[in-house]
Amino acid sequence: MKRLGWWLLVILVSVFTSNVVWASEKAAPGFGFFSAIMLASGLGVGLAGLGCGIGMGHATRGACEGMARNPEMAGRLTVTMILGLAFMESLTIYALVIALILLFANPIIPRVLTLVGA
Image 1 (tube, rainbow, N blue to C red):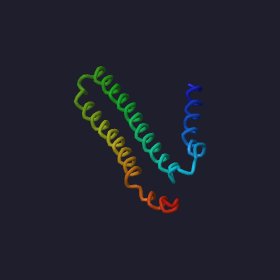
Image 2: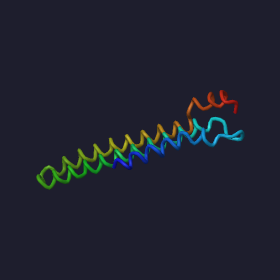
Image 3: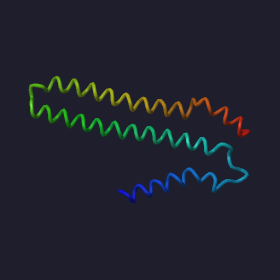
Image 4: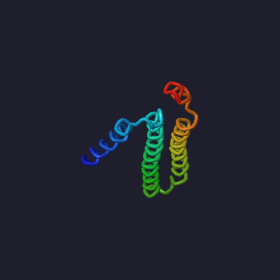
């Protein structure tokens, strides 16, 4: 696991510094800013999906164990589990909406474009 952490750090550093290394006269202005937005939105949605998926798995497992131990509570456990799953799913959709706002409706982008002269 420690090796994976180091490789992840190396990859992230190379992604963020590749602009500086490969800079040339013909490079698009502000490319680092836009690539950071794309990376952040992708990681945000990915982590939200991962976290909610893990949470949904734990909730389903707990509900199944509860129903196996006490079958009379199956109806109430199912309703509570479905309500919790809906809340988790709404958090994932919220992360997707924020990522789409960052990508397509970011109010900072026109200002950055005027600052860099594009």
